Length: 257
Image 1: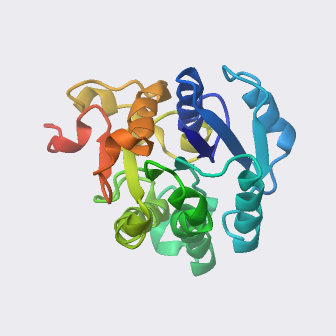
Image 2: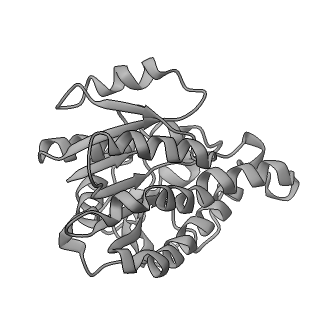
């Protein structure tokens, strides 16, 4: 498969684990680097991947023109894209950590734009390349169960609700092109992204105690197989879904006191 991967920050990130497993399986990968982040950082991380060199392209998911430019650059490498990983999330500090009632709209708008609306922008920007995939294509995004209110997650939770609901509408509108759109709701991973949320340990540290299969907050690799499955032709009849990869936590009631 030809896979476009966004959102690699460090070797501990879920996007890195997915990319690593994709390369081990022999898939071709192109990475993207967000604005304001030195390219050298991602280049150093990419050198730890099983195969190199890896092409890295700049892309700002809040800028339609840059998404279009990146799609054109990808088209110079491949005539189609089989899978796109949306692993992009950002919220200003004021939108997290228990500040829900006091967050200004400008910061809420940033969180929703980058973390939610960008899924639509990315899918539409790569629509032509994904529609050209001979066996259909898959967009996969990463979420954190937006069906409930979490401690400290605040407006990022609202942004993820936008992401999850957009998954359904994109599945509806892109299905005719053979493009599937799904999300993975993963348990908490202590990556750079997770660690940047004030009070994140309130959620992460007790997760394994309440998940029937247990949960290792340092093991992002458990998400890799499901993500690649959803991008592959094996998932040809699956779209508009949120797949839980969380040790079964989502299926349990509140823990007993």
